[in-house]
Image 1 (cartoon, rainbow over the protein chains, first blue to last red):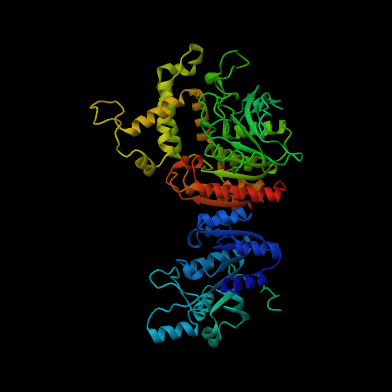
Image 2 (image 1 turned 135 degrees about the horizontal axis):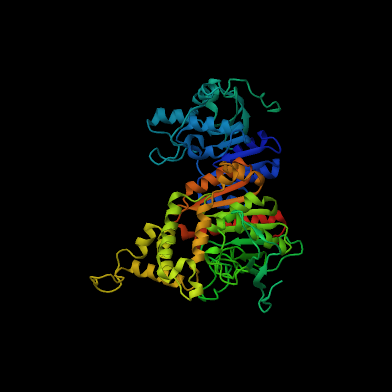
Length: 219
Length: 384
């Protein structure tokens, strides 16, 4: 099963039935369509290409043309239960702002990205002295859209910085089932090819503690 | 239901004029006692009355959306989109297009005879607004016995009417498509319209609007108005590509003939327009557009104007080179629709054809429009 499909399956597992879901960077709408069919969600999408939006419209999805850096402001605060950013965080101009925007307009964010701390990446850099190209990161440095790569460790530090609660994390790998992990364990930063996080705010803007962690995870 | 029902073709077309069964209340506080609505229909209303699509025309458009214009003989203004096998297919939908109140193609407007005086209204015609036009359309649709439209679709001023429908009659709509429009007229929009109006009023044949009773026509003024407006419908790259600095003949005339092809083109646009359009209608309809400000109708909060539109399927489209109703304006609309909880979609179509792109060959627009309508038709249960 491809990495993208692994991602979708894990997202599908995390999302509660009937939830309001925003998929940022929804492409041709495959994930939203899957979630609508399997979880009966009320789905919306943001997609950068007009042809992607047109494909989504043909599937009956409500999708806005736009990009994560600029257009998340088009949605009012807390209009969704989940905001999904699948394998896109590393390609946005301002990951920190995008992450906090996601958690402004949704109670929970589901974010996945390729882990630059994976052993194969580290080994390639160490042995070849060149920017690693892997299955998850196939493009050369000068043409890649992945401009903000990070490791598992980098990401958990950013979450702490933004006062986000990590409710769940799984490692994703090509051809293997998703594996629940503790993202702060150094060994996982070596092992996880890609990781998927379920995040929520620890505090509202006022400092008041919000919500409780989604209890039905990894049961 | 119509005077000219044509059963000779596979597609039924209808058309004619229907008088509204009640006076039309106007935003100005006045009302119009007798209102005729000229219309065309294509296709057949299904037994559930669930497949009606209202197409709203733009400033200088009319009800002849997909049939030859009776005066010019040219194909309908959106026959690229409306027709058998096309995006709005009359074998599936019952497509209705009405001439707006204030227009000059059969609906009551300033050229109509006032029941009070027996003379053309001219400038005694009350100022009308986009909400007035939509109120008349809603009354018309009701008289046809249609409770809920499957879709209301329009570009430019037609798109403004679509937004007004979403604000005023969200319960009578299943879906909506607003193309190349905005929720209000900008200062620049108003400014260009004012140039057009002043050109008309500066024509000595305009006679304070009373040209009809004197058998005159302010053709020069109306043509200049059209020429100025036409520039705003195009983009600089489109004009450059089409005409550049190409000359009509070899060499310059060293005078004020139409030396450049772009001049000749504009003159043609102006002179052909006056054959089919009434100068006073042009004043009234441009005024209606200038007065349009949907947020102002809801204490300045656009999202409030759409408060009844929660859950409405609506698709907003803009074109990259449209400087009359730019993408930023469309985004304002979409943001307000999102705030109101509508099921809003938005597409910005890459095109260098300017505002008029919505009338032209734009495959991405076609794809988005047909995808949106087909999936809505499926949800509505009218898709085969």
